Image (cartoon, rainbow, N blue to C red; front, side, top):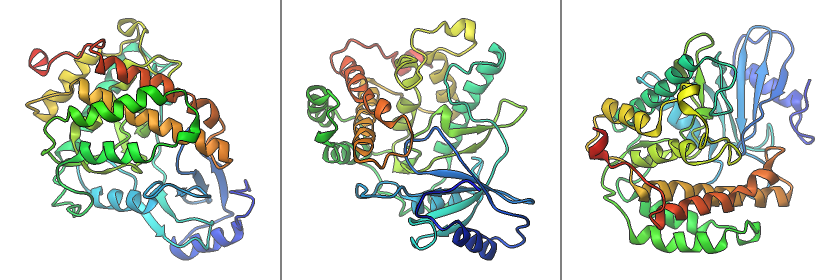
Length: 350
């Protein structure tokens, strides 16, 4: 059995699961799922069941961060909607089993693509995968969040104002990312250039290719994962974040900027946005503000990863390396502030 963490009693976890998930047969087996930078996640296997455990990391956490209770809640609320999510079986808010709160969900069979360039598959399949991602995002933003019981999952309107204030406050100056001047400028520029904030939908907060599960043999999304940053928010925040792959290099957290998209079969950013706008029925689209905000937020998140690495409680092995990306993303954000990065107006896409 793979050890969960040195201080975790795996026998206690085994007993807890057999009590709360009836009918488990055979020994419990654990396998760490790599690739994430936030909440530690494991496959938990028995002879007759395949489960997933997702828990808060240990150590001192920022207020409101790593909220596995919210993850479990929103996935339960979205069960049965047109958006596919894993089935949550158990939530444990106490820390007496694995050391922190956690939840258990059914394991969804499928493929997760870690790299946006999608190596190893055909150009035709790459295109369909990207369009399927846009379809899933439009499905999310069309969900009636009131009918889903999520009226109190966040505040209506004012999403960007709150987010800018939150990430500005949560900046960790000890991260030493080299992005201080750019991030300070963004902290001033963004609140001075707020767009209309009245629209409210469910906002995933981390909607990207690596957080989607695709069918084992088909190019369609079978589960949307990693809901840690979700809340009631503005859909264009998700859209701009989702499009960052087109705006960042492969060396910058796996972007596709500079690659031969036509040869790869990957839609251009404009094609992708047109696809999403058509499915979602939008009357406006992303602007320089939305991209600058998305990149700013990621820069601050990368600073936090670097800080956790320095403190010794980072989740991923490459946390120190990823933390250095704060400066790169802040510089990218400033390209939108200075008008150096072009965004095709919504009117030209529809």
